[in-house]
Picture (cartoon, rainbow, N blue to C red):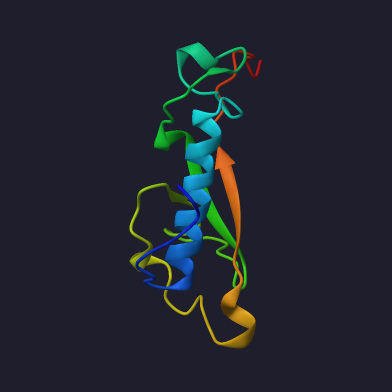
Length: 110
């Protein structure tokens, strides 16, 4: 968990791994809390062991993922499916990710 990525398979995969490690670390430190399921209906609760199903990732930079079957991907899905043509020399070496977090709410729509 020191930020080192030993086997570099590509920029998309490596940057996504770094983001996932940060989410894991923040959960272990108690900074991020759980917000899904029955316990998260009306507020957050401590979740030191994260549930990957609570998060999804969406690439914003250098080429945004805006739709289709791989627009918003769950944590754990292989990046081979959506990293094609997302990394290119010089300008395409920095990556930005939008992290979506599932949140259950007890307020009804009616």
